[in-house]
Length: 290
Image 1 (spheres, rainbow, N blue to C red):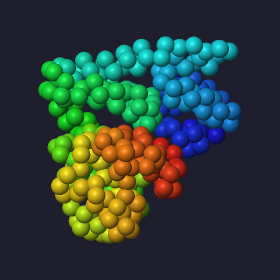
Image 2 (image 1 turned 180 degrees about the horizontal axis):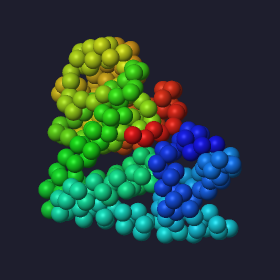
Image 3 (image 1 turned 135 degrees about the horizontal axis):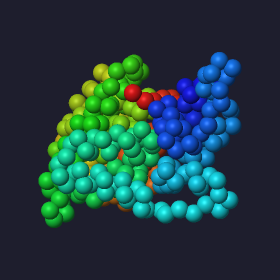
Image 4 (image 1 turned 90 degrees about the vertical axis):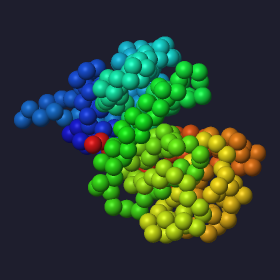
């Protein structure tokens, strides 16, 4: 099969498969009689094995050795720690070009879901604004991440015509970077998304959903829900809304006793999984590349 067919079968962007082949020798094509590069069907299983290790946090540069061992061992944190340090050093010096380069390199090697889990969420935790001396770094990184992911979401949205998933910042924070991580994860899988960075009252949320014929709406907050929508109003909103309404973000930990366990969607990865369980068809497709 061609690299495009392999990409569709495995849910990995072609550019990532090419990097795995050329830089790391993880997959091996064969040549057709006309000299075309083709991939045997066994390579599907090979890619699945690669993804097993990557999703466990193993850096791509160590996967080949692990695949060739009977009893693989690896350092659990140092390779990803090194990548986080690379991004952190760029943030500390406010070097946007260096930050772009490091992120783009990681993006060429790993799926968005893995980058979110292993790189971006830990870095956001490291750069919590409330930590002493981290305010400038946090503001710089949040601004860069919002710009970077906003552009990618816009580009990924362009060819998508189906009804969107709506994402709304319902907290007091001016910017919720994890909301944009969720938008990126969804758009990367072919689900159209629309994002509002500012809270809306329930009647206008309903109006927006009706106008857009949205499949689902995610209300995201890092702190307590206050005006214009309190937690007590959430059930009423759900009953009146024609789409599924999910509450997500660290606010779910605050309301843990008032929410059922399946609604504890404290981070973008958990929210993404919950949206998958709603049966949105696009989220069962494969990751796409720009």
